[in-house]
Structure formats: C-alpha cells, structure tokens
Image (cartoon, rainbow, N blue to C red; front, side, top):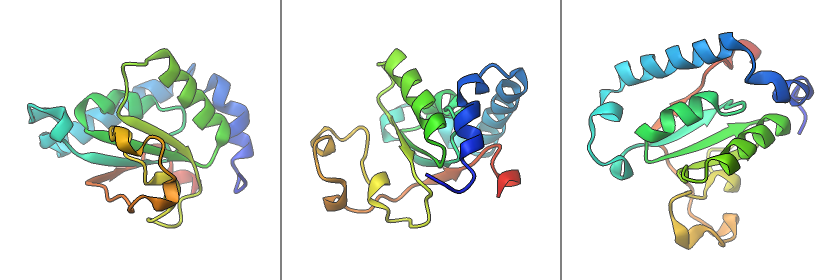
Length: 147
C-alpha cells in the first residue's frame, strides 16, 4: 500500500508504547459513549451498531469500543498497523466482532469491507460476491491531521 503509509508501517511495532496515544484513545472512547448513549445502554450488544473505523492503527480504540458494538470493521492504509492489530486479535480469541482490513478506502462498496465478522456463513465466501455493507456509525481517531 502506498500513500504515505511507510512511516506508519515502521512505527507500528512501537505505537502502543506511547502513553499519549493510550490516553487519547481512552478520551475518544469516553466522548463517543457520551455522544452515542445507545452504545452503552443497550442490553444485547449483538443487536447493536455496526461500526466502520477509518484509520484504526493498531486498534487501541477498536479494542476499547468493541464490547459496545455489534461489529467493527477497522481499516487503515498501513499494513504494519493492520498486522499489529491482527496480532492483538490472535492474543484475544474471544474478540470475534472485529475485521481489520488494510485498504485505502475510496469506495464505500469496496469488497474488502463487505464481510460481517459475526456472520459465519460469510467466513468462506468470496468477498466480491457479498452484498455491500452499510454501517450505523463511522468513527475516526488521530487521523484527520494526516489527511
């Protein structure tokens, strides 16, 4: 992947060691829960919102918010960040509702974001044969200043 992601590929391994990034992600979660009370108030997370996170990095915010949402599709242009995200998922196999994808998302119908991570019938499907996904909420954190 190109588009300036080389820097973030290189920084991915040490990204989570920055306490400022952890603090910022915690504050972002607090703000999101404050502005979207349905995330923290619904009884059954499985009937909750499907969220698209643009610029997920290593997934700091993703893992914090995942208990409050039905699904979270996390995209980033830096393969190193997505690789770090996937390692975290391997270490937390109980987290089944997230899908990390390395993509420069410029098409809302991109086949790479069509998979619903909770739909077992789709696990072995060809992404391009799945219907386009629609999301209830789109979030982005620590990204805008890079655009």
